Image 1 (tube, rainbow, N blue to C red):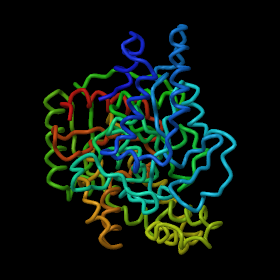
Image 2 (image 1 turned 60 degrees about the vertical axis):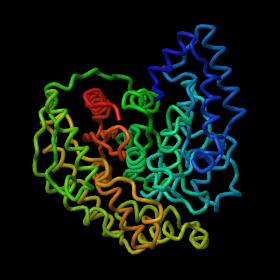
Image 3 (image 1 turned 120 degrees about the horizontal axis):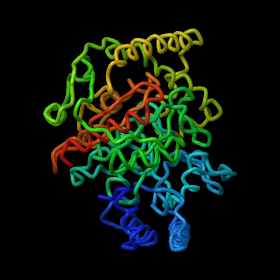
Length: 445
């Protein structure tokens, strides 16, 4: 498993080179037995080789631009890259003019020496948690690949690319769980920052209020390394697990779990308690009112309806299920929108007060393991039922304007299960440190 620390040490010692890492990633993408053709919408093979060679020359000259210098990364298809068309997983933008500049998040990665390996597949316009895309195909989850399970969405291609070793980090976006859901279902780590910490300009929006930009990677510490580049915040405490105060919300967030999820999550809690963490179960009624927060699509529904207004005459070219979700927002009145904002403010106050005495809130990232593509897409009813189930827990943190990391907690060889470590707004680096301590205390999946 590639980690930033291991690869950086290998580069520094001369045991490997950026060019070698890029060639390995490109080979995995091109493997006809793998999922590269569905995980990536565009591969920057020649440019990536040139960038890797440049990083190697700088390293030989004693120049190291950042801890992630020379490591290959992928970009979700909704980020602007200078000279390329940003399609956001859709066909309707095929003839759009190329972007004039990199999105700020992409520019920050490039300045840190990251090698851009390519653009990854996604749910069209980032509007879905299942991970399907009828235009470009659906990359299969690495678990039980012969059966064919969903990757989770909307950063579907990024999660599969990360899990299959096609990159060291996949840049994604998260509006109601679109980084954490696919990370959890595919068995990798992911981090959703407080929305305002990482610039969102140059990323095709789903929700002006809820969108956030963050990494999927092979460990929480890898996520922290890339979050430092993206946010500019570099402080990172090395915490021990003993004495950490973890709040387990007694609510729907820990109910109605798949057996595999319940078994893995409970085992992880037991291991953490044995290692000295203080796990306290606390009633959080605010987590049981999601039907109010996301009624009719909620804030994202209203904002997406506005964002897609210029393309309403082309809705027939959308993924039909994405088109339906866009149309949900047309019935939200201005007064309804203001009411949801007021409801959100009250929710934030309520949860922040409960969370204040604790180092983090913990819960399963998703209440289920990845369903098969066939069962999740058999009908619209099945699709929307699975879509809600997959993003049931993650959306609570977006509505909180909080931050959250997910890390694998399943047994080796088992169905991937995510353990989510959550915090309130702007507690990001502390939450990453807590999540890293939890990761070190749990056996590797």
